Structures are given as C-alpha cells and as structure tokens.
Length: 325
Image 1 (tube, rainbow, N blue to C red):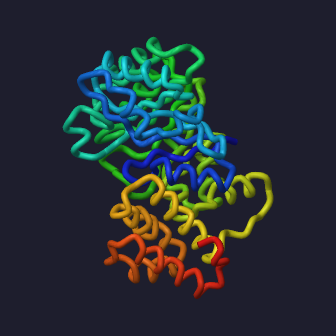
Image 2 (image 1 turned 120 degrees about the vertical axis):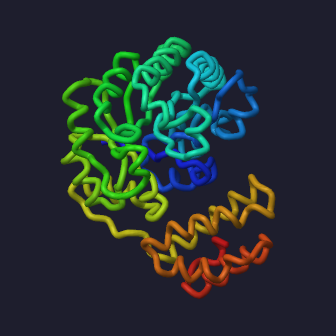
Image 3 (image 1 turned 180 degrees about the vertical axis):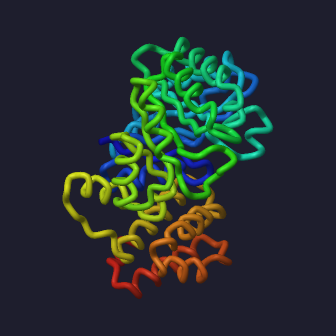
C-alpha cells in the first residue's frame, strides 16, 4: 500500500509538506498546481511553488514531490512539463480535477473533463515531452456534471501513456460534498491495467479500509483528512498491518503547530505567518475541540510575536515542553 498527500491549493505548500512528511508513512506529495496557459514559465516560478527542487525534488524527510501542472493547451502544458523535468521534478502530475470556477473559466481543471479526448491529448503531449524515466500521473474526478463519460476519460488517459491515475471519486458538480463514490473506481479498474489511486472522504483508518475494499485500490491519496488528523498516514498504515496506534494527543499537536509556525516565519513575511496557523486550526478543530478554542483566542491577532505568544501560552497550559517553543 502506498499513501500520498493530496495537492490542496492554498493549504499544502512546501512548509506543510515538510511538516506532514516528517511524521512518516507518506510515499509521495504533489505540489499545488502551477497554472500554465500561454507560455513557457521561467524557472523561478517552479522553484517558488516547489522549493524541494533544490533538494532533488524531495522534502527534508526524503519524500518525493511531484510537480502538478494545470492548463488546457497541450503544447504549452507539455513545454512546461519538460522544463519541470529538467529542473529535477521526480514526476509530473496533471490536474483535471480542480472544481474552482475561476480555474474552470480559464480552461483549466475539471472543465476539461467535458471533453475526454482533450484530457487524453494533453496527457499524451506531456508523456512525449518528458523523459521516459519521469512518471506522468493524472488526477481526475469522475466527470464534470455527471460520470457517464468516466470510463472514456480513464481509457483515454491510459492509452495516452500515463503512469498512474488518482481518482477523486466525485464529479465537479459534487464539489467536496459527501459521499465519495468509491465504487466507480472499481468499475475503472476493470477497463485499465495501470495503477489507480483512490481519493475522497478518507477521514480515518476505518474510512481507508472501506475505501480499499470498495474501490479495490491498494493505494490511497489523503487530503483534508491528513490536515484534520496529521497522523492519519500513520494510523492508516498501522491499521492496514493489523495493528493499532494511539492518535496524537492535543499537546503533541500543539508542538506540531509551533513547528509549523516557525517554518512559516522562515519562509514568509512575518505579517503573513499567522494566516497558515489559523487556517490549519480550522481543519484541526474537526477532531480536536481545543483547536477551536485556540483559534478563537488568536483569530484577530495580526502580529507574529503575539500569535507566537498565544501558542506558547496554550502549550504551557497543556504541559508541553516549552523548549519546543
């Protein structure tokens, strides 16, 4: 079984990738999408969204980071894929799943699923443009408005030479509303032989087990669940091995929050560094009630020193090792 961390625009940047992969049990990450529309982008754009390129395309923990491209013009996407490979990306991922209206209006993401032949054409162009040793993976949904063309989409991607496909088991119309239709992935496995990775509504080790049973997939991509429970990859891995593992306690999560805060201060302006912490707390409060209280206490703070002080107070209140702060 392989476990991947999903690309989430505006959420899973290189600092979050570094933090989550440091906890172990992830086999791959994918960057936020690099939007390509009209031209070959300069190297600085790729380095900004994927600083791991300076580390052989891996996080500090050694986890490979595939670079994701989003665009609707085959030649432009292919040209930028070739550049990403030249810069050291260990793999190229193509985004046909983003449901955002602004992205779809600019001919990117899930809007292309309306025309399965375009999905295949873009995939084939990228496959031809990058060295054979560089994997070309695709992230897709079941379709745009409906899933009647899903198998055509999957066949086209496979015939175009993709290495594997991650399926977010919802249509664009479904957005992120439950449920995820894992059974549709099982249908796709009957018509293609390349590996399929299941994605969508995996919030717990129990969800992961059900997803694998229903979809028939060995491999999973974890998205929002890994933000709500940063140890989810470890819990899933342990459960798959027939073992049990205690979830992270709130004091342990607090130490992760402080590490994350420090990472953001290292890489971003101090005036921005508090925003990712607040955003992550919104996810964490799904499983940790204390996160909601901490969020309320710092949500109006703008100064990085004040936010850091708020985190340290919370750590002291819960008996955390203050040297970690």
